[in-house]
Amino acid sequence: MLDVRYFCSWWGLDHLGVEPMLRKIRDAGFDGVEIGVPADGPGQEALHSALETHGLKFIAHQYQAEGDFTDYRLSLRRSLERAAAARPLFINSHTGRDYWTVEQNLELIDIAQDVQDRLGVPILHESHRGRFLYSAPAAVEYFARRPNLRITADLTHWVIAAESLLVGHEAALEEAVRRTEHIHVRVGSAELPQVDDPLSPRWSQELQAFSEWWLRIARRFHHEQRDLLTITFEFGPPPYCPVSWETGEPVADFFEVNVRMKDYMIDYLGKRLTDTA
Image (cartoon, rainbow, N blue to C red; front, side, top):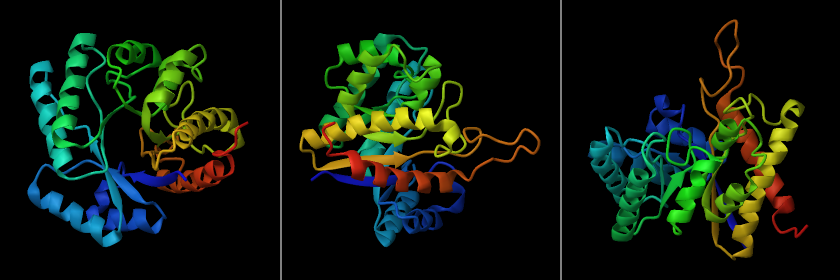
């Protein structure tokens, strides 16, 4: 039986401090957190202590690599090694830049593969705007050139890049489903990276499309008799969360949306995961 575990992103919650943030996530019924690994020893110790206190698992989020290509190569390796040393379930990496060449980004993929092979911690690359997997068409060549490439599927980025619910991109989507090892749950539209209330009838078409994509991934895990599927809920604060034009205040509580979507996914997958239809 496939075990599905539900994680909350730390995005927009980090101002609370590590211990209060993890307590909030635990009390909302999540199994773990997806979070950046602190660069300093005391910060890492505080994170592990709070994780143990609250009984939460964790996924490392690598977003810290920076600089021009030469510096980025070194920064990426250091960031991945630091994340791996923190003993996460795996690392979700924001890798590369959309303006670097295919060959340059392939070199970064190979650096990540080397870190994975040496340290034994899986490294996934997120489908994310601004990174090498910024769109469905861009992903196709990387998939062809690196057969072992595995990804975190955040399909909102591909949707907004395509300005459609991936109409005409079925081949890339099918390959992404095959390569996905972790899901980011957020609902966007052709013009928005994040809708205000994904459970509103206004966004029913978008919710149905994203739900069916997530279900395809989950069913693949089930059919492959995998033990564990991880899902991170990643509705975030402004500017992702829409705001009132009059006040500039967010029109929704992004954390409450994550909690509601967790409950939705538990019900949705529970009813459909083992269906063959």
